[in-house]
Length: 187
Image 1 (cartoon, rainbow, N blue to C red):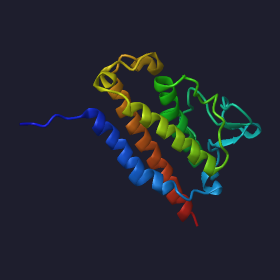
Image 2: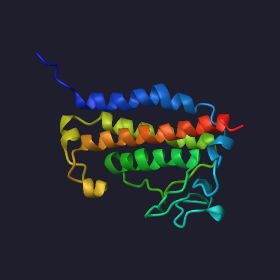
Image 3: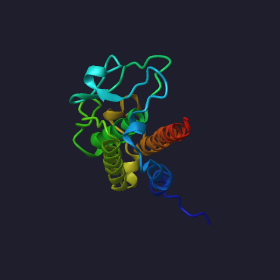
Image 4: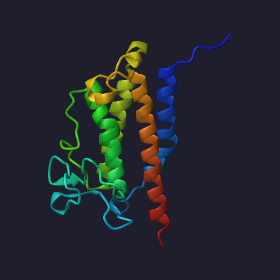
């Protein structure tokens, strides 16, 4: 007799195991120099508004994330700071805010950190908000449609969004960790 598969548990476990075992430990010790390192000319990063590279740089204060929509082709290379910010705000933060909070988190409303410590704090807070939200869902919550916050994917089940977020987080975290390796080996 087959054992019932618990999709919510498996979905949470997939991301949390990867995050807790591989991603977050490898970000310990991140320095400000690594965080803002631009390995090639023309990188998008987190920077003072007066130095913004993207035409639509977004942020609540004097610090912004370089940004353009639609994204240019090819898209600019991005720094660790930009990638961590994207994971924190675009992957976890906006989704947690839209689905479990007040909907106030956007690229434009974010006070982007210029330090590695601040970037890690933003990442940790956003990850916790997302995970806390999905842990509260029951089977009906995982099966319900995502709703208008997900645009053309509004009718998809929430479980599809959870799996998409897992994929995005793992993908962008791998890019971030690769940049740490390249920084370490750059000499």
